[in-house]
Amino acid sequence: MFIKKLPDTIQKLEILSRGAKYDVSCASSGVQRKVSTGGIGSTLSGGLCHSWSSDGRCISLLKTLQTNYCHNNCAYCINRCKNSIERTIVAPEELAKITYEFYRRNYIEGLFLSSGIFHNPDRTMELMLDTVKILRKKYKFNGYIHMKILPGADDNAIEQAILWADRISINVEFSTSSSFDLLAPQKNLRQIINTMKKINSIREKLIVFSKEKGYCARSGQSTQMIIGATPETDRQILKLSEYLYKKIQLKRVYYSAYVPVNQDSFLPQFIKPPLLREHRLYQADWLIRFYEFSLDELLTENNPSLSEDFDPKVSWALNHLDFFPVELMQADLYQLLRVPGIGPISARRILCLRKRGVIDLETLKRLGVVIKRAVYFVTIGGKYFGDVKMDYSLLLEKLSKCNSTREIVGDLFHRELQPI
Image (cartoon, rainbow, N blue to C red; front, side, top):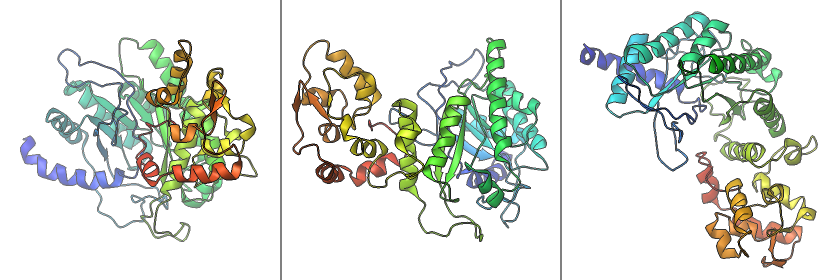
């Protein structure tokens, strides 16, 4: 039975996976769960994503749509109703079965399920939930599932999605209402943010009352913003991200450089996606989440754009030379995190190791510090090791040589392994 359906199902998945590839908000699972008795699959806190894990492994999800039929006409989307493309829909049983078979054959490590809006959000969410429930109940699938919440879905659909998925997400796309009015008039920024708040509230209640039952989206929720399709500044984009992290406890905001897939007078016309800008936004986001920087320290109303020449931390350091040099044998965590080349892990290692004795440059390398940047902003026991004095013009020239193409391109894959 399965073999007979396989060719037709594969053809459907080829069409639907093409429609899903521009959504980058599939996230690390953050969930540790062993295989259950009589079940199949497990999750690791190291993460599952359609990219690279933190330990360098290339890992995969079945990333697909339930359907690419959609009644919305978002100008930037390949699946918009106006486009003349091949359309299809996959039945819940069909998608659940092939996900199970792919997992059993070790082709995938989980499912990322999104969809166009078929008839209405609630009907589409019902199809997606049926898929996930068949996987969980019939096939005893205990692996990772990331499920999209569609704008306009009712509370019951949201609650069910949270109950059965490991992570959920709803894409905010843009940071201003004017951009929605221009490119996605059928969506509403305020409604999406209110849905995010609702997701957070429902999820917290379910986790409290469902300790022994349900998956409860324990990995939280993420979202995506499109970069370059609309005129928002970096400050406007990051201001919304900072709000989502602090007020709605989002696990991750993903930034997706706009890729032109449609011809539309409202869309910008350029050849290359703004990948470097996307990269700088990820770096700034990282500083806000893990380096104790505030948005106002990185960008202001008068300077709303991130530098393309330097990462945000180096830019901040060059504009705050009065803060440096930082004495490594006396600095607190806050001061260490502001040194270019020192990350949260290496900063804590320095705090621990200096209790035992003096630290030198070779020791810093072993601790994970990027010496080629840090050396110009620190002293060790009062000694400065930079080969130029702390002058803006001289440091600008030196750090320009450190800003290698390989380093930039490497981070474009969002591996984020090196301290900023």
